Amino acid sequence: MAKIIVAPHAGFCFGVERAIELAEEASKYAKEGKKVYTYGPLIHNPQEIGRLKKLGINVLEDENQLDENTVLILRSHGIPPQKERALKAKGVKIVDATCPYVKAVHEAVVQLVKEGYFVVLVGEKNHPEVLGTWGYLEDAGGKGIIVEKLEDLKEAFKHPKVGIIAQTTQNEQFFKEVVGETALWVNEVKVINTICNATSIRQEEVRELAPKVDVMIIIGGKNSGNTTRLYKIAKSLNPNSHHIEVPEELNPEWFKNAETIGVSAGASTPKWIIEAVINRIKEITNANLVSS
Image (cartoon, rainbow, N blue to C red; front, side):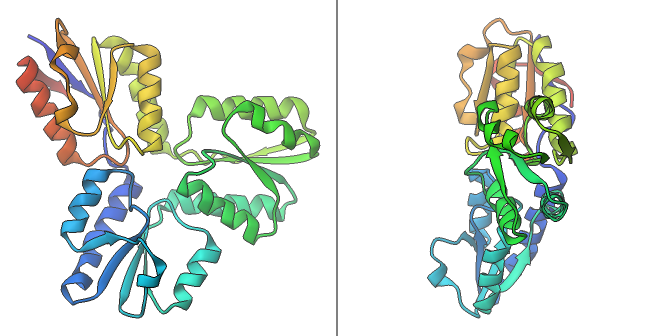
């Protein structure tokens, strides 16, 4: 009989869980007749965003919707300080659900600017967390670049002092490559490792689990950076790896002759979806859940 092995830390991290709890608490304002919005999707999971909508929490589409009868939840990714000041000026009640680990990145970038470093921010250029952090760099009067690939680093080599930080959900291996390459070309390098421990743990668990199983399933939003990175790690170690959002995406063909099935999920994937996927795998394969 096949067996299912679930990575111990699959699913919500501390920051996401905190953001969801703050949002659920803020849903009381909707019952009082106030408009409750999140500034962008609270987390990168469409199904959980749908659940919050049922609680009266909608994603803000147009800032003209904001007035003094509005409660606005800042998402876990954070926002630029300039934008936060502008929102407060509208008289909106702010619920700040920015992850504390993301706030630590904001503090790190300001610190590097004050110390005179040209900043290398390792991350995805259009990711909301990166855009928020970049706002703090600009607010502090700093200069820097966002690095998605090693080729992006060339501009940094023109500067004698370079400070390196990362988007909290970045791939650790790539961060190490950026640090190593920069150290070869720059006189002084200061590194502040801002990759969240939750990210590191989940990536390490997938590295360990994926090669040991016949099929690896990664659960989470297709728009989730940290989930996509888990999938890429899994795929590099096990060709029979698949990234899904919901149980309906599971293909019975994937599990033919599979004796072991590994499961992990991104930090923005709720427990109820993970459980639904596991139950569906059980239906398809008649497998037993042996560990989690």
